[in-house]
Image 1 (tube, one colour):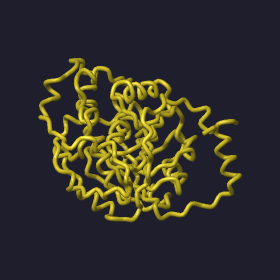
Image 2 (cartoon, rainbow, N blue to C red):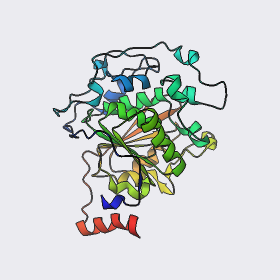
Image 3 (spheres, one colour):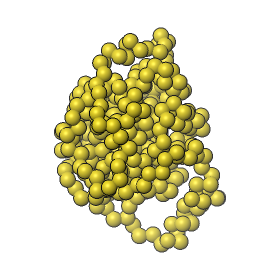
Image 4 (cartoon, one colour):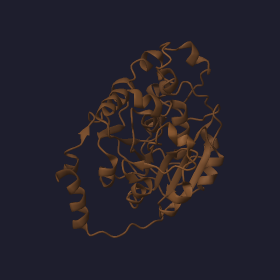
Amino acid sequence: MAMFASLELSPPLQANDSIVYADTDSWQTVSDVANNLTGDHDIEVRPLNTNELSLWNSLTTSSPSALSIPPSTSTASSPTSQTPTSRSVSKSLLKKNKTTNDPNDKRDFLFGGLPPELRIQMQLDDVAQYSVTDMKTAARISHFISALPGLSPDSIVTDSTACVGGNTASFCTFFRYVQAVEIDATRFQMLVHNLHAVMSLVNVQCYCANYVDVVECFSQDVVFVDPPWGGPEYRSRCTVDLFLGNTPLADVCERLVGRTQYVVVKVPENFDLDKFTANVSGVVGYISSFRKMGLVVVDYRYVQPTPVAPGDAEDSIASKFYS
């Protein structure tokens, strides 16, 4: 863990559940998972505990069997199985529980599943107001990812572009352990506040770092990437290429070969999928059943990483922190 010496971390976890990887045998295809996605107004969630339930009380719930999530091979219990039931709440709840009349304050929209007394405590800046994923969309993304072949509630997720926690909080309710990386120091503090102080989530560790610099420092089952789309101008372009900083998205993904089963990327509808597919070695799938966005899934389960001498790998990682 010496390699993390220069990373700023969130407070230590309060719970140390063991993490067991699930069997990676394929049980259905990515397209099968996409076909099982429910509509915007019919989202399915598994039973949640009391704290988690408050995060999603704006969702319409029903039986989780439709997504056919494979059973975990671990004997450890999932943190999402602490209560036997879940409940549905009227969609009019948001209108009744508005925390502010400020048209520029988007907390009611972005965090509408939280009770008003928690929602008003959520922190976000001008960038987060227009880039963080709202809770309803985040839940649909998490549900899709949880149903990918070989994944289970025991899987580990890395949110490489955590912002103030929109997707990260959702991942915490679907998966045992989450690693959240945010490059901006101010938004990192907001991320820690939102996840730990407001939502009381304990199965997440936050890191303040440029993910491009620390790609090789994490092990996980899924890496989620929500890269910048280039500002409002992206809509006027025929196709859009995505980057993390100055690094092409495809290059970031290729550095994850052997370190993750999947990379899932949130992209605009005019993303240059053909160019991206030509530059990655994994099997690429595109899911279009989301409003004004898509998900690109890169399946790296059967791609063999290029052999690297142990000494070279250690020197490469160490140089990121001690140069």
